[in-house]
Image (cartoon, rainbow, N blue to C red; front, side):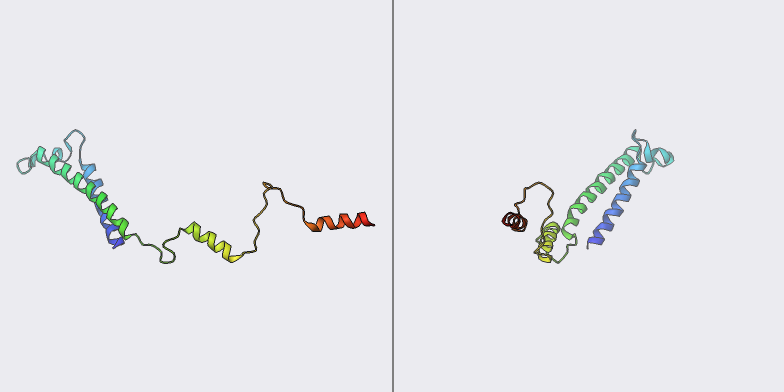
Length: 124
């Protein structure tokens, strides 16, 4: 359904582009090229048709864009969690003994292994 609605949006967008390109900003667009056929469709009626077609196609693109959000394919893994949260959980479960790198932002306490050689030197 997602692909079908996407194709409809694409077709409506292409038609909208063509309709807008046919129009002339001063009202002479399509009607000026067919001046001999004014008996069938007058200048005013051609302009009205192009305007209605433009608004209809624009509305169609907007409505289809809203409708397509209901059919966006979603992954079936953890739909409730974001990808970032899932990556954090995976990182914790992969190596629980991993230590975060020290960037010099916090002072570290001295380890007892460093104090032991100093105490042995004092005793000798």
